[in-house]
Amino acid sequence: METVVSGIRSTGKLHLGNYYGAVQNFVKMQHEYNCFFFIADLHSLTTHPTPADLHQNVKQVLVEYLAAGIDPEKATIYIQSEVPEVTELYLYLNMNSYLGELERSASFKDKIRAQPENVNAGLLTYPVLMAADILMHRATKVPVGKDQEQHLEMARTFGNRFNRLYQHEYFPEPYAFSFSENLVKIPGLDGKGKMGKSEGEGNAVFLSDSPDVIRKKVKSARTDSLPTITSSGEEMQKEIEKVRIAFKIKSPAVQSLFDLMKVVSNSQTLDYFEYQYKNGTIRYGDFKKQLAEDIIIATAPIRERIEDIAKNESYLRQVSRFGAVKARESAQKTLKDVREIIGFKRF
Ligand code: TRP
Image 1 (cartoon, rainbow, N blue to C red):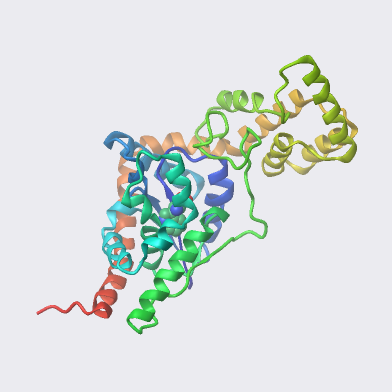
Image 2 (image 1 turned 90 degrees about the vertical axis):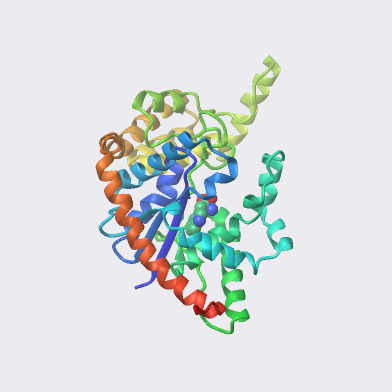
């Protein structure tokens, strides 16, 4: 059976993008592969969370993994920091990763721009730690989004380099893996790109959001693409809208809301609003009301389970201990081989 590894950084609550883009696929994969799903809390240290936040965020992701349907009896669910073998492999891989290639990584460049006051070495070697996560279980399939493609390529590079250096075909090549045919990209409510927690308040709908919060967020989602400042601006806006409708081109913001509807609503609802859009009779207020209600229905079972599981500390302890034992078993096998390949010998 092939091995699948994926992780989510514990930097807060999971949103619809995490769920439809990743976790829902994890749930399907657990029946067919040897799956390891972990919470990347070591990766989250690059932004220096407080001890209380660190723990709270790890708990949040663990609870939400379970609420979404990842089964600890089928997949191995673990917390990265509870498997110390990963930091050892990270150290070995660091010896074969080069400053130039690490500096060229797109995520590193983004981070430098986003947090110029905190360009730490952990940020630079983030892809090495990620490679260690994957290679530690000798995984070949990694369900991640497009934005992680470059990191995966680096994981292949580091694994291959290790193999070449020690002339040992040890690490297999991991590749991005999508379980469903069409990779769903969940747009943010602001119409400016994907849903994300760092994109600003109101852009993301979280799995744990209450129905009222969901209604409020969707209601204030933008449907136009330009701010209307003056009355002539408003006129222009109307003209643009007419041209769009004539050519059947939706504004990015409207397209985003339709994309969301495609995921959470049934096809009749979607067709109904598409038809109205084409006829120019769509009322965005009604459209958004329907979208909000369908998001609420689609996420209701998960929301309820989140509340129950979060209260059950002993279950969370049991799941994380069990997961750590299974993950360490796999990791220790690899590390034993790796130490031998490198040439560490005990006297
Ligand atoms: N870098 C990933 C992200 O930001 C998280 C991650 C860390 C990961 N280690 C991984 C994903 C290993 C897949 C496999 O989303």
